[in-house]
Length: 356
Ligand SMILES: *Cc1c(COP(=O)(O)O)cnc(C)c1O
Image 1: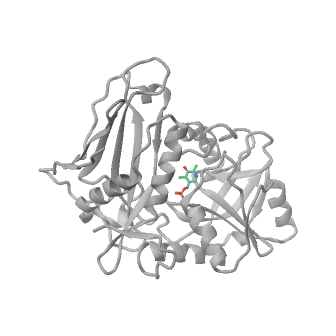
Image 2: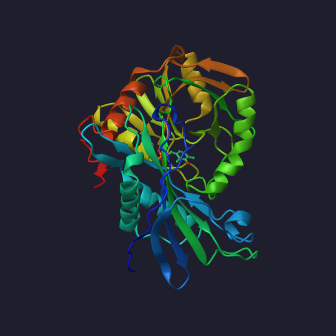
Image 3: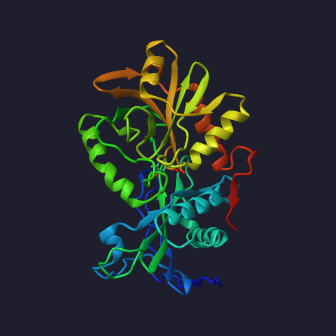
């Protein structure tokens, strides 16, 4: 399969947004990457074209049955003028795990990274430079057969778009209030919880909206069978520091295997901190708080990197974690990961890949 990328540059570049007020996912760069899949031919017609609307048949399968997936990663400008991606091969491995679950054809993993690099390179002037900002990269794939029968599509589009984003927290990292969800569930074993598929998000919106009405920024999901064990928080994995040990739910099929989660585990181990992946009951977290042993709690994900949890509410009982302050460990992990991503700290784990 040959993968030449055809390039069609825009003739009317857009004005760049104000770097001090980017928000998240509101602005898009001048170009996008597109590649098509046709049964029998495979992936073909890789191209970088001006960013713009797509024309779709109203019967497009993804719009009806949700055969659609995505990834999320970032590119960073370094002080010395380099552009770094963070562990992009992890995203390409994960996109194929997701694809396999959703009956979407596999993508050549090295080509995926090459395509992202080529696109980022063309729009490199869009990567913001100020502290905490980055270029968010959104690869996604959706089924394009224009047929209403329910079956895996024979045609797909793989697209990558780019969005300059601001620091997730304008005033540094701040603890958030989390609602422990006890009626809706996100995923069950055998379902699609481990896959980065659009339907998981569609199914989560109701709980998120109800939590927001009560004043909480996100929900903490419990397991879909007993509603007893902690799964993840919104679109982040979750960690608890209890009596010096860091505990995170083990990956058993219903949790998204986050790359920030994996990086955090590596970092903690390298610091000599005990980190355990296992099932953890929400009752255990509340009991640890009662005993004065719950030291920190935080979420991990590409968008925010680390999001400290300041308050948890479960069945009407609220607990304040670490006096509602950002913990020492949460801060340290945030500083270390963002330092490596932006090239300010030595890349001791070989996590960054330069775009040239
Ligand atoms: C993407 C995602 C995460 C975080 O994964 P990262 O690779 O760390 O960005 C966590 N949970 C869900 C449900 C996700 O979709």
